[in-house]
Image (cartoon, rainbow, N blue to C red; front, side, top):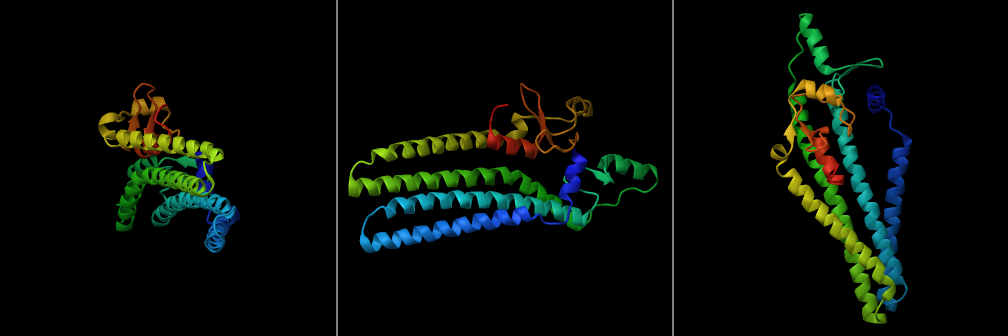
Length: 264
């Protein structure tokens, strides 16, 4: 499975489905912006009307499209870092080791082979060291950025619902039919804020809260495969063990997993 994933990711061709996806999201975003502008001009010229409803609905859809596009950009940047790593050092591929055909040869085994053959692996170049630092910093911040995007999108939606409720209440009286949307949006924002606060609490001291795994025998017993990224785990790779269940992840994978849920 890892070999197939590596071959897929190392393919140089750009899939047309990605181009269609980005084009569709940008088209929908432009339509939402145009609809909001048209409704705002109509209300400014002719006074409050049903265009207020259409304008706020378009604004909420625009926020959703913008958050999806921002999340997609995070994945694109992550893929760019992986491609740059592969260009600088073809033997590197996101922790999957070296590949010869469809057979996986772990990087440390290949290094041992080269050392036994009298040809020690060359030291990393300056570009490789720079990419390693960039990749490490990016992995630590990727989950937080994704969390912030979702939180900002939910906050904007709740703000738009409040403004819509206030405008309708000012001109037409108590909008009973909007109560449910405002309440649901508030509950979603409250849960997202609570999850973000819990996420920050758990990730603020990960080294003390989660036990580091430094024993190869323990990793062999766990399977050495991170169930989040499906990559190989090494004793010196900063792997963390969850208390209670005993599941083991990469540290950056654990950070991303905590961004989605806080219980195993």
